[in-house]
Length: 283
Image (cartoon, rainbow, N blue to C red; front, side):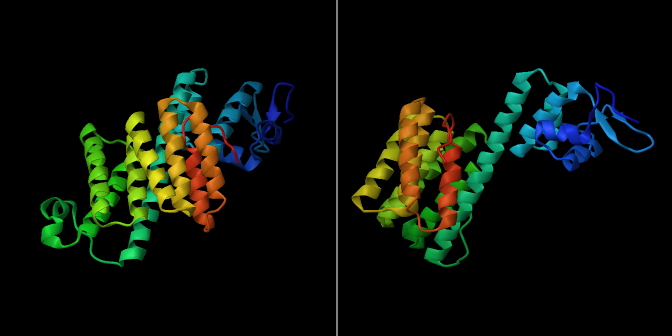
């Protein structure tokens, strides 16, 4: 069977939309993007001109790892930009939660390296015990800090969980203030700023981001912590709708990231900067 003037081979479609022929065959097998015609003798796939836009949309969404079922929902309403926008917003929340999980793991690993591996207290233990009864205010600070990360990692938090996350961040910062080094205080301020930014509250996010940077500068703290102090200011300004200031602080974070010793830490900062709403990519 030869393709007519209105039909496109799988190879031609692949070249036009930036996908591979293998990917198009896969999307056919999973029922996402079926060809208009399949030659019964050769099995060759042919697509109609009206499928070019669908294939291009599939390629764009899959390039940022939007799940297949969500791509399917977009194809079911190809001319409804509101559907595509909602899918992308949901996917962004999933990516942010994934990024928070990675960052949380990194922070918890740092604490394990610094403090050694011990059996952590449960949330109930944290609520029932005090530094005076346990003699371990540092452990309470760590457990609260990590508890905030667990809540940040949740994609769908209740209002009560948002409140709990906020209070835990402040409580962790308080306990670090009793026994922590300046770097712990800076990280505590950063976490408070991040929580407020996630909750869409720009003024306290800016306040705690500014305090975090002040602590870094006063104590000559650099590397990863300084870059994240700038990142928190960029994010807080973005939440406030000040794109110019958000860009200024993002550029400061990028400059600081160049001095980060570990490649993986630098990559994490750069990835986090990309997640700031409304900011173009600078790298």
